[in-house]
Length: 193
Image 1 (cartoon, one colour):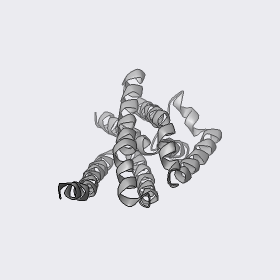
Image 2 (tube, helix red, strand yellow; image 1 turned 90 degrees about the horizontal axis):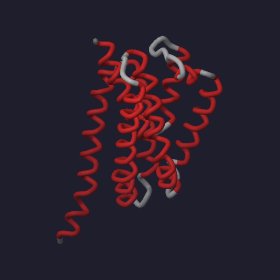
Image 3 (cartoon, one colour; image 1 turned 135 degrees about the horizontal axis):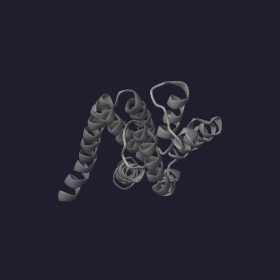
């Protein structure tokens, strides 16, 4: 029962991470499955451990990391990623949950799609435009770097220590909510005067 709970927690963490950066959790799962015993991917998900897949994912991580740091390009990237991040979340959820649970692959895909899609929507519709507006775009590269670090940490913890990942995820959500409140507060006071 413990493996099932940690497996589901890990799958949710990986798909949430995909909402921030589509390729980081896929690359983390690929590398951990290839080089460690932390995760074993069953067919057809074992294709993630091929050198070609790892190479392509590495290039995609670099491309997205660079595109997401350039003002204006980051918003175009987010628009393109509206379709990619939920799909990546669905894939990584199904690949990781299928190892330790008997959850239906269709249900796994739907859960991953919804989790990654929700995280992506909050990021691209609520958080990033607010950061851009309040910092004139200067804060975007900083926030993007923080998102990449968070996606990497959450992905690794989702596989290695899913319970700790849950704690980190809750703390990140709390910090994000506090940041949003802080950024919105000055604009409300400005309009009230």
